Each structure stands twice: as C-alpha cells, then as structure tokens.
Length: 97
Image (cartoon, rainbow, N blue to C red; front, side, top):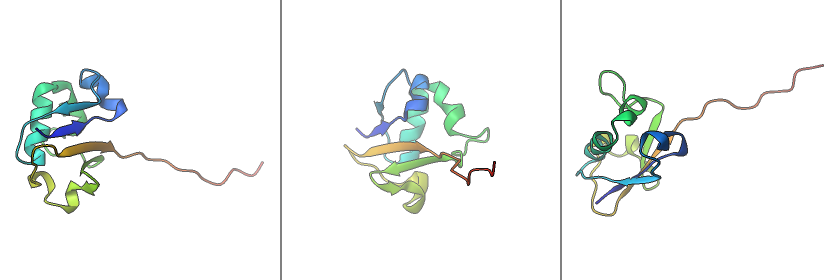
C-alpha cells in the first residue's frame, strides 16, 4: 500500500499520525482515501469546490506531482507521498534605527 507522510501541523487532524497507509492507484485516489480516513484534513487540503489548495504541495518521492501527472500520478505498492505545506515569509533588511 502507498503511504502519505503528514506534516507536523496537520497531524492533529490525522489522529497524531506521522504517516498513514492509504489505498489508491493514483495520487488523487490516495489523497481521497486519506481524507475519508481523517475527514478533518479535508478543509486543510482542499478548497470548497474540491480542488487541492494551491499552498499544499504533494510529492511522490522527490518529485512534485504537479510536474508529473498531477493527481493522476500513478502509485504502486510502497510509494510514499509527502504533503508539504508552503511556508511564506522571509527576512528583510533591519530597519534603520
């Protein structure tokens, strides 16, 4: 079975799990199985119209699925997906005092 790695901020919505075994032949099916098992994750991963949120990055191994086949990216037994939320911010010049 494929596994999905859950980032620390979302683990509280996934029963505290760092990873969850899922079923599905594609990344989209695996993500859908994940939110079926842990419904509280849905609002954090998907928009109201069912699209994956733009700030949620999903990787199969080291590859962003957006650059593969998106949610149609095929999965096989033992594949790992990682959910990586985008982080905004950065550093700026210190203000002149």
